[in-house]
Image (spheres, rainbow, N blue to C red):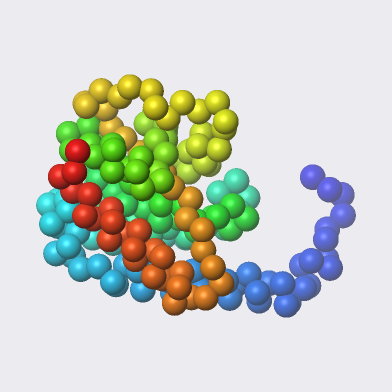
Length: 182
């Protein structure tokens, strides 16, 4: 820890305002994305859906983040969750968790640019991002049908809000149409 406080940064109102505005922009983007899908559509994909929830925090390895969870059943055996994460300083990620008893449309996820994450740490985003960015990651190792899966994809965005929302909606629609594809 430094012995002096960075008072210049602390008093930089423009910087603080920009960061807070960007957080509000992503919150609005996630709200619009969540509202673009009905509860019935989530139930059609996963009958035990518990709906949608947005969470936010400031300390994912020292960086702010926003999370949109859709379905929200985190049971390792029978659960399912679709998660969009805006992790400041790192990027935007889509993570799809499928429990052991869920149908596993592995080919669909591979064909749509997802990488297989670490099933031993399904909710640790930092570990997942490190795992998929490590060149030695073997995402083609044979999996047993009875293993849970966490699929992860980094999503590139552009500056225009409407285009960003459309990118995320298309990604979500593709996932929701994967039900039953093996």
